[in-house]
Image 1 (cartoon, rainbow, N blue to C red):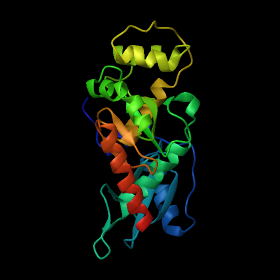
Image 2: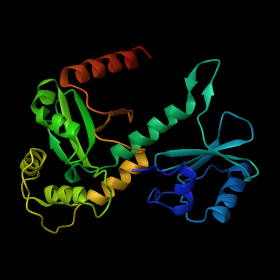
Image 3: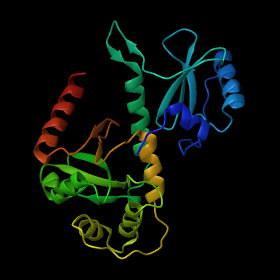
Image 4: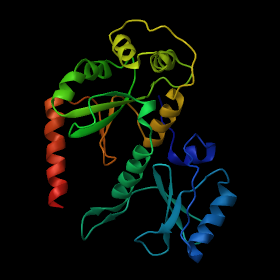
Length: 248
């Protein structure tokens, strides 16, 4: 599925907007806020704050960050890196925002494999028909044995009103979601039934995260690993990442 640019999504309001609003209280931030209100009226901003670059403000919404000049005239898409310290400033800020989004989710809307006391939790955007998603699911017990808890969010790649979405809804509406997920990913038909389900909301969340393919693995700090990773290799990567964080 072809991805739109962030600016196009801003103009169309494609489900990326957050309900909360918190603004930095300075004149430049207020000018940026006022400009966005006029030029992009549907955009509900989470925060406006000074960036490390004088005269440029960071505007955050959902899991997105853009930059707007102090006069509210120019919008900049891109990442800021501190060349002296090599700190990827925008990337780190995005991880914080994505972690906050993850932390705000309710596990009752997910399909979870593994006990809470396992060392690691990985949240996976999954598609019922995706071959590598099926491969990952076939090894879900191995992930658990390697200390990794798997939490599924629905991401039917074909989008709303597609057969893939209908299959995901059938799984999420089943009485036993875990068994229905296993059945569906092994090619068995799961009876479709109507219910209040989170599939479409999770699909929009995936778009907000910038997911373009499945499976997409989201680590607890908000970092995204695209694609299938075997259980032992994922555990090794998680251990290495944890060790690196401890050093910092």
